[in-house]
Image 1 (cartoon, rainbow, N blue to C red):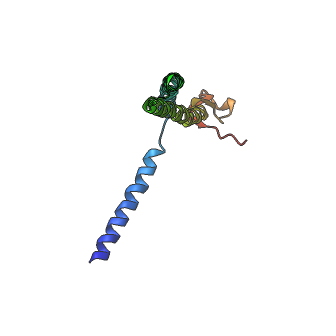
Image 2: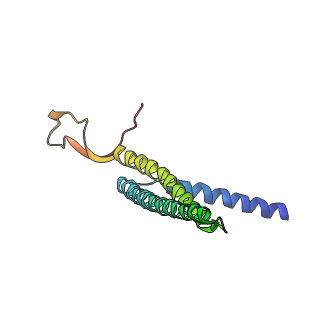
Image 3: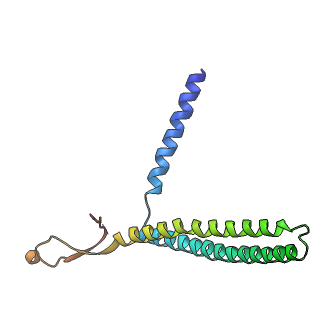
Length: 148
């Protein structure tokens, strides 16, 4: 009885997964362009925020480092390490966010290329010109596949 339940669950999971892949592949040119625009916006937000955090963390690290050197020259009492640690952490998070923006820019470019290859334009028809009053071009959806 348990094996039947397991087989039913596995079969239904396989069928659901197989059908969802079919829906994921049906994207139009506008869908690719919208997805690319969203990814580019996300990349710019991560890049700007990452650079800002990196600069703030670096300034905090430099300021706390300067204060610790000055306090050590005057008497070398307890050095405030928390400012240096938090500055380094903020700078590290900013650097990681900046590096995290790179995949968004790359996938944005790939989606723009997919949108360019999938276009809606008038294609010439194969009807002979002497066949009568037929359209010489037909509106069609074309997909160009680069072979390089």
